[in-house]
Length: 550
Image (tube, rainbow, N blue to C red; front, top):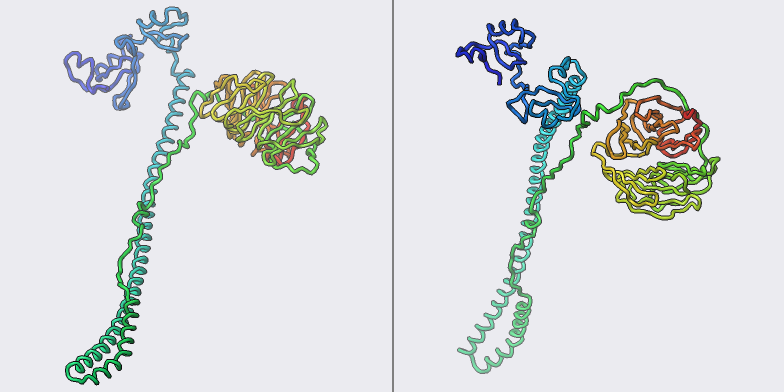
């Protein structure tokens, strides 16, 4: 924290307001001490800054982080590290390139390191601003989503209430109908019973009168006359008893309360940030793109004839040692064979949808992968049939490349290196930003090139970055292969051209031809005199004459 009072004056027991700050002495100075500072020989070249122009926080520590009371007086070129008098004998005794900070820092403000530091800070700030804006956008979006979800919940509640009211109305209507029907039936039965009671009373009263006041003759006649009537009454009573039901109305509750345990749920999803970020040092390794010239270095000759077999998406092409042209179609699921004059020989079905294929030099074998097939399949070129398969794990992109000793296969997050028999030798781990989208190839120097969206990356056999090639003219990189001069050629599907690079990733030329349209994959003939390109989204294989090798 910078003091508001002059520190030399404070040391002398005075409290004068500071007006300048010396970056070398790291002290606040009043106007009088400032003038003295400017004329003293030892301090006249120091940098003095107005206190009002100082930032709130200044990170200018000149002391050793390990030996906090000692200043950093030396710089070791070998270790690219600053050190104090204690660190020098401890850690840099054998280092020959050690110099003083004063000498090492000469003109450092105009050095490339200082420029790189400024650029790195700008790079970091730009990334942080993007992240901050992304967070604000997410916050705003979540607020809007909350409002929308609240409306949706209210709508669900309203719909359920409406449905319940409808069900209530329907149920009450049923209740009324059932009750009315039951009451009507009971009223009818009550009337019938009342009629029978009246008839029975008449017979009872007659019988009692005869018993009390009539003669035996009258009793005899009355009994015999009333017997059919009583039998009929008894018959009707029996019928009423048999038809009489004990009616009860009860409410049977539905299981709707158990079914409606909730109105729904709030789905919470997290995805990785969509803000692109490449570490600054990797950005420094990107090759600057300078378009030298555009030229036509290959000429369309013809499309390969497949004798009535329609192609729907050729994604892999290779040529064997005996000049057999082989390509595979991911949509037809077939592998096609042609002789050295590009005449169609035959096609065979693949056990899985093929994606990429590569012939192993010095053998009669090719290896093939599928887009999602977890196997490397070995193809006998001479017999034109599959000989075996080796499981390599779920394929990440289905890409495959070969050298005279190894097979390279992409699986998720890494490249698997096999021997020529398919036995795993080692794995090349890839960082997240090195994810492979389409194809890989192995350069003569052992470096591995692969395409990833609108860029082509090169790594060492250990996975360390070598270069990244990106260009506004490179919109959708597919496969990349090398010629006999170690140049790298990158096929661009959307721009319909070829980018020719040096082995270091510098652009040499962009090659194009009017006959090229949305190409998927390509390869050279063995003598580099022709290029075979899966043209028109892989629906045709076009042959071009080239002078690229000259």
